Amino acid sequence: MRIRWGTGYMEIDLDKFFPASLVKLRRLLKIIQLDWEHGDSLLDDLKTHFSEKIAFYSEADEKPGIVKKYERLLEEVNKWCV
Image (cartoon, rainbow, N blue to C red; front, top):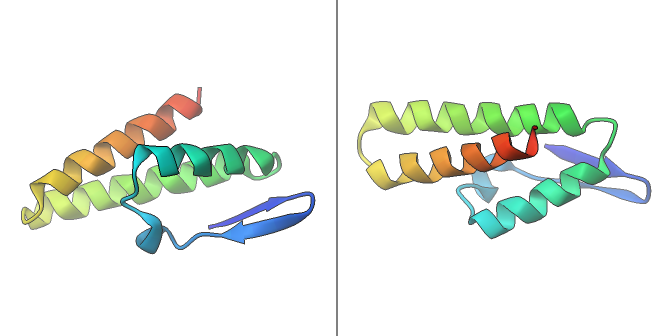
C-alpha cells in the first residue's frame, strides 16, 4: 500500500504491518486521510486485506484469536468509511 501526500509518501506492507493494535490502525487511517486523491481506494484495500485474512484463518482453524483481531480491525475501518 502506498500512501501519498503533498510532501512525501509512505509504503506499508500489509502482511508485515498487520495484525496491529487498534491504536496503530487509527494512526494509519489518519495518514490515509492525507491522501485525499486515493483515500477511498486505500480504505477498500484495507477492507479487502482484512476480509481475506479472516477467510484464510477461519478455514485454517489454527489461530481462533487472530480471526477476532482481524474482525475488529475491519470493523474499525468500516467506521472510517462512513
